[in-house]
Length: 240
Image (cartoon, rainbow, N blue to C red):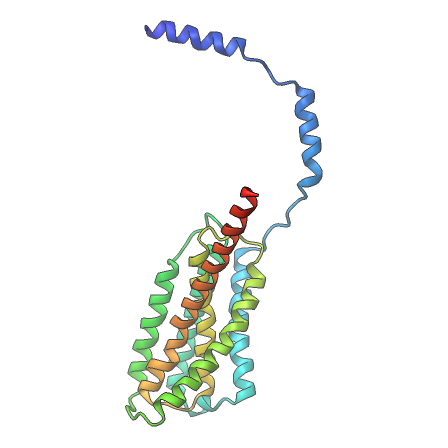
């Protein structure tokens, strides 16, 4: 078939195609109108990042105020000037990435996995340099207590953060859960550094830092479980 013949066939098909009645389109649009209420826009990214940062810091401060600022008072001025600004930067990075994960098409500084890795290795380096007491008194009992306390403060941080971001949409819910758990874990570590006076190096390097990966893993698993449940429920509705 020649190219000219093909052009003629396409032109004839376009000419013979039936146009849609404009009145029908108007009726369809009118019927859809009531079911499509306007959606309230999300707050600016900087406002949500600031809210997440404030929640993480507030949870850490409130927890330490209730349990006592024993760790903060025992730290030297130099240690305080290094540890808490670094934790603040890591919290901000996690908050920024969590916001980005809940706004499709947002610009990303780091991936959720990179935020977790950076947080883990930066804390490992900082704490490894600052704390040199390698005694292991009450290693397991004290360590499990601090791990539990850190995770206990991660839970409200994650929940309140979810309330801020609940109107967003995470394309990759597991990644969003991972970075949300990382932020919550950093709040737990900050609380421990303010409260815990146990400066044994292995206690801090293992049990304090462990709050972050455990919290991140819990956030990713919870997001995966909820997404799987939602997918299963949708499939069941389609079959029925």
